[in-house]
Image 1 (cartoon, rainbow, N blue to C red):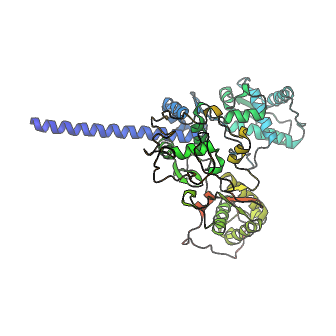
Image 2 (cartoon, rainbow, N blue to C red):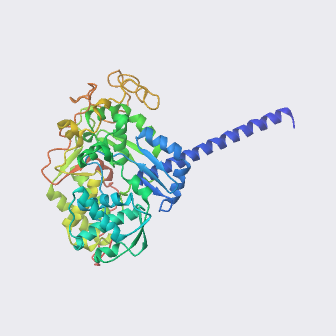
Image 3 (cartoon, rainbow, N blue to C red):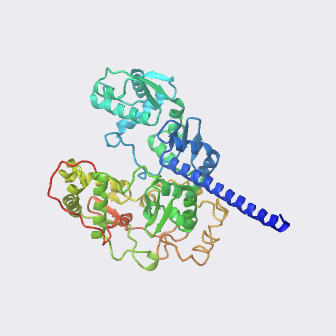
Length: 509
């Protein structure tokens, strides 16, 4: 072998080694991103549960994930040998969703009361206990807390308790050793032996209980972003809710998002694999892998299919012609009121055109008002409809400063200081695109979030931000159709439904 040949072989080996190292780094990054996405969708992951494979990834990358969640979202990650718990902060009022029972109905206050009372007993219980002992402990805890519970001989009361205990079993706080909890709903004399995981029970509650005297104080305290200020407040809304509309943000939050939107777009893709769509009306986080949402949409089943069709047809009929970016002189339109008669007609039409061929459930086909309610609830939860009487959070905050969950001493989020990634993006310094911000000179060419060039509203620094007053119209009906619904407008080439006259009971598709 000549010296030159040896040098060429050495350079080739170096390139291969570097390529291998790069591939290894990419694999590690992908694993961390998958683990982070799993925790966003499932804040409690156990070694024995349905996401056991993902739990192993979380444990493998626990140090990096702990640092990442703390830095970017202000969340605390607890990783133990048997479980991982992402302790999320609460969301502002009206931004979250409640628990759902096995029957599909939502948890009512009575269900939550039983859930919290049961937890208060289980955090100090033994490794096993009888169901009758747990029920007795719950009723004692209720007396101590001044909560009046109905007679357990009433079946609907036992069903409420069983719904709460079933949720605790889903979280693996409880496990059935002998007998079943469900049997108690039908017969108060039924007994069961339960296994208790106190460690999981002790980390379930995320709110600051010791510093809260009332339920309202607990909700408000849990939603405060803490030292992260606006950065954490806005990011949490983006990653935890289907869509963030401009009028759901306070003026300070709007100003921060406009200045930081490109940096946020990069960061959220790198850390969580989320693609951000930046619009004049707000911001939408799209998950191409559909791994971070607990409600897939579009989805399967009668309600999900009908909701998609209803939303698309409402967009076709109500889309305003003059909507656009305020900086171009267009009108900012976040929502359009939906006439009740139009909604009724739309529901009837999708039933007529699609119910038979899609095999929709007879209960909904024969009861259009029920389908309207169920589809409406789903569209509201996905941020595509809003109840007409709902006041956007930004307007509530303007009317009552207490509605803003951001600590007033932290609203500017470090004016003139370095951001978490070392770039300067405040108070006239360089923004995330390397250009000067609103007060400091030239803008970038793609300020997608409405920048308020023609607006009167200002944030705490005196910068102008988009005025969203009236952006949802004057609603006089049940619902307002929101801007993100336009993503589901049918394309002109989409095939028309085929009508069939053959009958059938139908079922969930």
